[in-house]
Length: 90
Image (tube, rainbow, N blue to C red):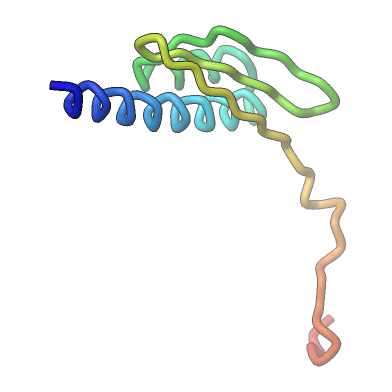
């Protein structure tokens, strides 16, 4: 019985972390509504959502287990392509 309960806790912990990561990515890309939708699709409830300097922090809860994740949107168009010293391409 105890092993089954520990297994359930481990599964819900993993689900909460996955839901938090997915919600943070959705929030960083398109906003709070998308984060909430993704969390709901993963049977999670957002318990915290904040934005600080282009970084989104999302905390979710599933069956009493809380997990959080951060995501930042990077504008790759402003980054210069990296080339190795032996790469002759432009």
